[in-house]
Structures are given as C-alpha cells and as structure tokens.
Image (cartoon, rainbow, N blue to C red; front, top):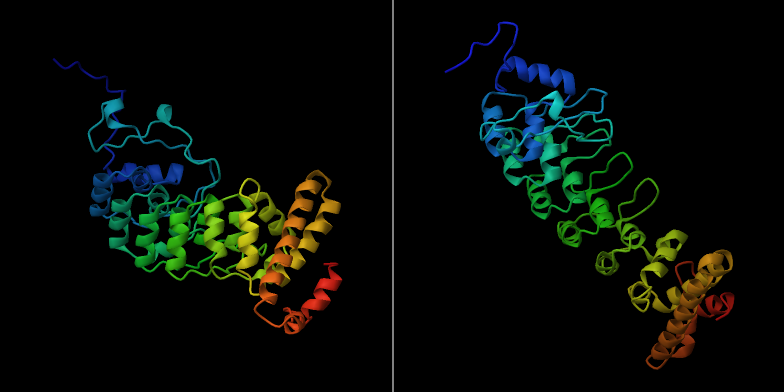
Length: 332
C-alpha cells in the first residue's frame, strides 16, 4: 500500500525530461550526452541522439566539474538509467574543462560503439579541439586505444594535427609508450619529424621516457641525426636508455645514421665534454664516450678493408669537413 507523499516534497523528474537536460548542462557544463559518452552507455547515447540533443555541445563553464555515473545495480536505478545527485558526485576532471564535446570523452575512453554513433551524426566534430587544442585523435592516442585511433584516421581525422603545444597524436602515443599505436601512425604516413614548440620529435619522447621498444622502432624510421645530436637532452637520454641494454639504443642510433663513423666520432666527443660538466653522471657519460670511440675505430677498420683508406678519410660530413679533419678535431 502506497503512503501519501506530502505536497512539499518534490519528486525528481526523469532524466529524459527536456527541462532537466537543459538545467543540468547550464549548471555543470557537461550534458547528459557528455556523461553517457564518457561512460560508454550505448543505449543511453542512442536515446539522447534520437531525442535530438546537440551532438557537439561543448562544456564552457569555468568550474571544476563534479560528475558521476551512478551504476544502476548499485543504486537500484533502471538498467539504462543515469542519475546525477549532489550527494553522489565525484571528481571527474581536476583541471578546468572547456570546449570538451562528447566525442572527446568517448574517444579518450575507447568506446568504439559510442564514437560510431556520434560520428554518424556529424564527422566534422572529429576535428574539434578542447581547451588544450587536443582533438579526439590526440586523446585516443595518449590512452593507447589502437582501434579508436584506426577508426578516427579512417574517418578523416588530421593525422598530423597539433595541439597548442605543437604535439601530434604520435607525440602523445610515443610519450606513453604505446608501440602498437606508434606503428599505426607511421604506417598511416604520420610525420615522424613533426616538432613540438620546444623542437621535440616523437623519437625524443621515446628516449626521454625510456620506452626502449618505441625507441628501437623509431630509430629505424626517418629522423634527422644531425639535428638530434644538437639536442644535448636527447643525447643524455640515449645514454640513460642504454643502461642495462649494453648501449643498444646508442649503437642503433650510430648505425642508422647517414655516416656512422662520423656520428660515432662526434658522439664520443660530445659525451666526453658532457662528462666534464655532469658530475653526477660523469662515469656513465665517460663510459659511453669510450663506447662511441670504440665503435668509430671498429667501423673505420671494417670500412677501410673494403674501400681505399685515403678516399675514406677525404669523405665529408654534413658541414663539408673531411673525416680526417673531424678525427683530428675530436682527438680520435
């Protein structure tokens, strides 16, 4: 038997009520479609889209949104229900969110079905940028969602689009160490030489974050050896990555360069110079300086048996200097 409810007690209207949708979006900046897309509620996303909600609505309120998807089984809500209550809210993002559309959230979480439904309403939204200039492709790449990245590329996402710091999706994937996604970008003809505003290519991130497998792969792709050697941070990171792997990354970097002997000689000098300035890692830097020098000697010996030594010593580097002059300059 139902008990009478006092008139002063207002019942909460269902989530599909248009007034609630509008009110929620105004108060929190995220619409129910944002939340459904983020949590992967396929049926709810379909229902909202069929009701005609704006598919590319952006979050524009300058607040720290507190949102939560209440699990139906835990709170005895309908199977496809979505409720948002003040007492059940939890922090969803710690940063101020602006210009985030549902597609950003779905791509970030890897919800293929949801992204498919959203893109069926408009493919143009895949180019939308959030408050950091990131597209759905950036977010999918940084989280290692291979199938999502593949889908977005197939749908026409700009594979080399940069965020406000000049990062491409390949930069994000490399930094996070998602080798399969990095390979997908390369296979899809992404620019391996794309530079951030700080002048970093994806290869630099592989070395900086000690992602050996990504580093091995990218060292075999197109890269500018001479430019990378100008980056002392990269050279240092290359040394760090070689710890425990018998300097394999450094060896690969030398062998993959246009002029391995010249590269080995110059690296030896660079590491020797760095060892005098970096006191804490002086021993490690000195060791790789010797390693590079030994590689130069070994390569020189191998090459001299196949080519005339005099011609070899006259070979010029990227600055037009003969190898003999480089050897003398670097005291080899």
